[in-house]
Image 1 (cartoon, helix red, strand yellow):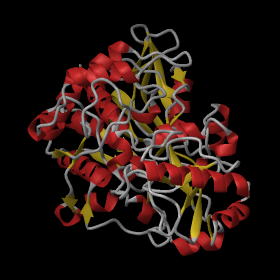
Image 2 (cartoon, helix red, strand yellow):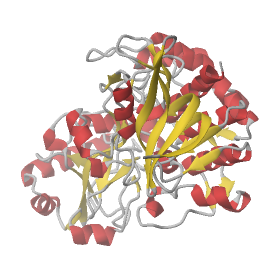
Image 3 (spheres, one colour):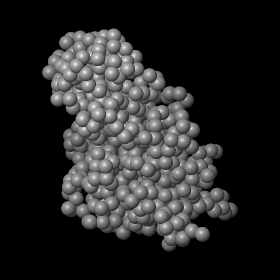
Image 4 (cartoon, one colour):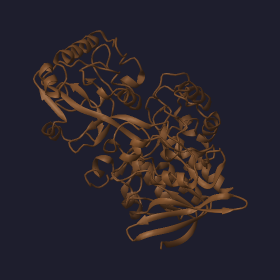
Length: 514
């Protein structure tokens, strides 16, 4: 027998940016709402993120005076979301997203969420691209300014969370997003229940709605519980990136231990529950990928902003522009098994530190002791130590150094795009090209990591779960990585996952309100 909890109007499964947006807006709309979180902390992968939200056309961008507009974003998405491998963008959903993005920003600002624009280039050189980006993010918040119960629930940043450390005194990026949403939600009277893993959906049948969702079953340390939802259930609990078996069955590249999702989370039970209830699914988006610095414990770290060095495969050869946006580089890694693992070969210009942003980077001495980093006095010796052909790696580094001298990467165009040079500060003719010529030399092992999987519940422009025949499954909604992505296999710019999740969470609440 399961314990029956008093019914709510809305049950939100998960506690990331999309989930907390939906919960906050539902509670503010007068719907009694509960958030069910699997772990004992709130925020999921969103709390690890930079907190960027790709929400074009809002007053935040207008106040910043940048060249953003809904029209420009429409042109950009039209160019970026090209049909590929049988996938075609749902133009109705794209138009709904563009129209509602400024609206959800206004809704969140009205709830006390403060945003600002910070420069971060978009990921494709395409018509409509906004110079230095159009993404916005919440402003930082002091932990001391939060209610103690809110501060205690926000998941710490990844480099602290993985070692069981506490959060920081100032919360920024994704930390600020979750803290601000949670604080506003609690202030509005919302309920959060941690330690609740939703494993199935409750359905009923009647003459009007047919089969429809009326609640959830969850497991807790104290036993199973039943939570009914008078209006509906919003699934927003991430993807299945933490499940090795689900990744294998859906053909998702990478491994569960390499994902950036908090450990023990995002194993896909709510998606499986939706399937059992009759929802359609789409697995073609695969994931939001990134090169992952491998750690001694086998975990991967989200890495971007390569400043110098060359990434080589098992043959000792480059295969892409190392300064590509992380998802695009990750997809290049996924094309060939010889690229996983890869090695970032760099020199001592930065004192043996990784010439990139890795979250977390870890201790270089621990990496060297474990063999996830290797050091040598020459490139040829380095090649021997990492198991790639010495002649090939030496030739690769020499060719790359020649490009550094001329300022033109003839092989992959590194440094030609504004994204390539955003994180770099080289002193040569191309600041994205810094030679590898100062010993000792290093190689860091990289795997294919991700920020989450993309396959999930098929939804319409209202966030409603759809059946295989295209009809809505009453009472069930899905957003974020629990839903099939609006952007398919593409990652248009910083904050696209959070931006789409917040928009469709808001639209789902509007449908729930009726």
